[in-house]
Length: 312
Image 1 (spheres, one colour):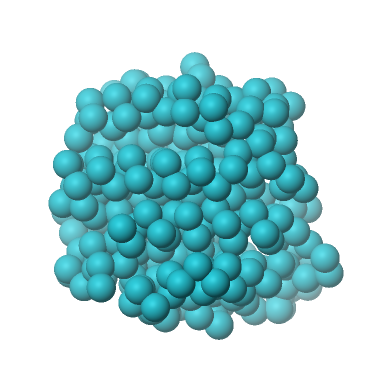
Image 2 (tube, helix red, strand yellow; image 1 turned 90 degrees about the vertical axis):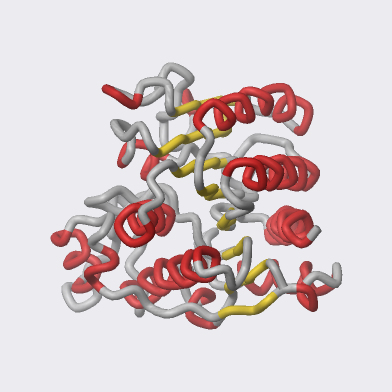
């Protein structure tokens, strides 16, 4: 089978208590929908492992890793200003998200599968030295660093269609000309995280390698498709050797934390087009991560649409 699906109890434990929108039921909501669509019989199920400290430090600062590791024992309530609560087993759960991502990377690079999908992952707000926006450790960031350090793959494409700008990935590689970023998200002028403007295109030698495409509140499938050709031209210009797709489902109409109005068709379309580009430039190698999405019906539909395209 050419698609590895990472879903296990350890990944399900990454979630926050007491009615937090990022709860521990999100993985099951996706699996239920995917099963109803007959997709799960066609994937290779995989379980992840917990990433070790030295692996986390490929992206994160050692002091921050220490903070997360000791947060419970110190009685901390949050890892940031209030969005990312400390919960029982937070370090282990967050490290498991990263470990599963790296198992997915190994499977793709070793030829076990051409593509991988990890619905509980894509924690794109976490910075090198702090948590943010429900994100403790930045698994795409660790994957990018591992591609360089372990596999010698330098030119990596990171495509993010989560309703929120992927600031943790963007600013970590803002000066890096070999990380090609395309990010479509809700207009940041009045929306979290308040960054990700069109004029932000990278800095230094990396100017032009980053593409931000903010969409106005209320935009839907048509507006997404109107700007999508810019993404394809951007990726074709730089010919990436590996594709990472953050397919947050919080842009679908009815998400409680956002104001875009996509349907699942946007996720299917974006995934299909990216797979074609990955086939052209990267030997088909693509990893997808679920990212955000807080309406359980929506995330089930959007992520199932992505998985269906990966299986085609």
